[in-house]
Length: 332
Image 1: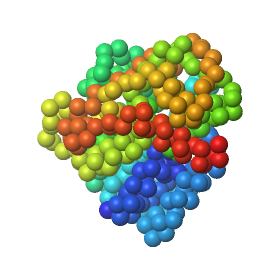
Image 2 (image 1 turned 120 degrees about the vertical axis):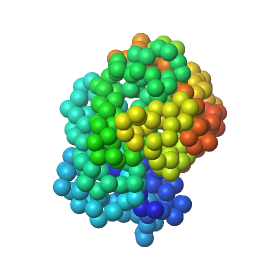
Image 3 (image 1 turned 45 degrees about the vertical axis):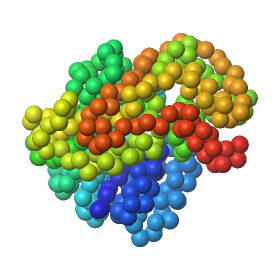
Image 4 (image 1 turned 90 degrees about the vertical axis):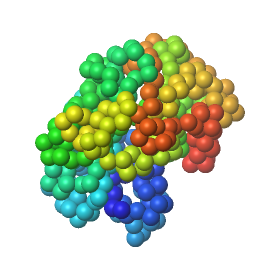
């Protein structure tokens, strides 16, 4: 099949493209190689993808540039589009909200307009567990009301879900949005906690532990996430609902959590990294940061019903895999 993947040089986009190429698909990636974090890491990921000379091509453009996006989309003629490109980061959104309006809202609008014009067989797009915001009933279910985002990042991602539903309804575009739950693993972003912790530990610096270390997360290893996305790409929303479904009554639109439903404490996460690196971290305990939530906990029932799969890699396996990559990549 032919896939179009936005954010192909990003952490998740890279892993997804590599998996699709390994399965023999053709992939056109779109990425603007923004300098939000070290661009060298993006170029290193992209160089690996470009070794698939006949099956992979990257278009360097901003999704905010609608004409350029349309040209790339038309040339690619994709069967399936997976929209991952976004401005990420909860805390960055506090001081730079304009970046989230541009990348997340305008960028996604342009993707939806292109889908309206070119009608892919399936449009999939990334959202976030942060969309559950102030919800306290756990595990988080796709059918839960989620209208209290606690960061502007979460607000923009939740808004893209609503935008996607409206386009799916109006133009009958089969659409799946998935909410990620704290993805980690090799090649992750330098602004993510695990990467920052590893850098500080190897340098002998103190790590900053927010929420006094009392937070918990439904950590999702990146290989599990990619397995779920690939399976969901083949699960096109129609009119037949399954038990516990989030399928819209008005559109071929579905929302799916991608998380294992087994939260771990932040301190257990750090302990696994200390073991993997063979060093104990110096710790500075700090209060919760603005925009953060104390816990995330995914209901994985719908994902498993639809695909026969749920993320199951424990942090005792995933974190050593990250640590091994980190040592190799940075020569640590």
